Image (cartoon, rainbow, N blue to C red; front, side, top):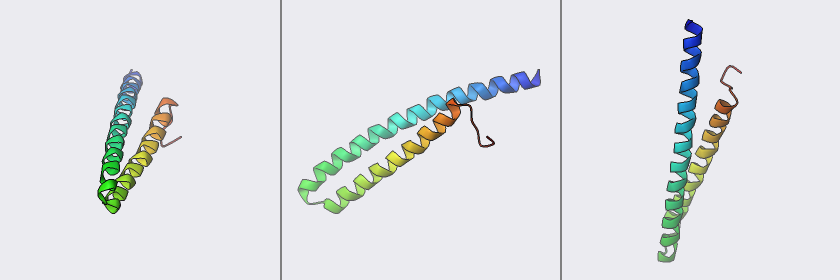
Length: 83
């Protein structure tokens, strides 16, 4: 009985985590788009280094999304650290 309850809680937690990761990925994409729009507005004003740093931040968010997607893939395949 205890194992059945634990399995249910773990499964429910994974489903919630998948939803949360999806939310973070979408939210990060929105920020990336904002950053790139801002960088495009800064360049014509001669603020190239600032625009470059903002673009760099956007790239880092893309890498974060790759990591989040990998974590989600592991969850959906039923893997964990011990696999």
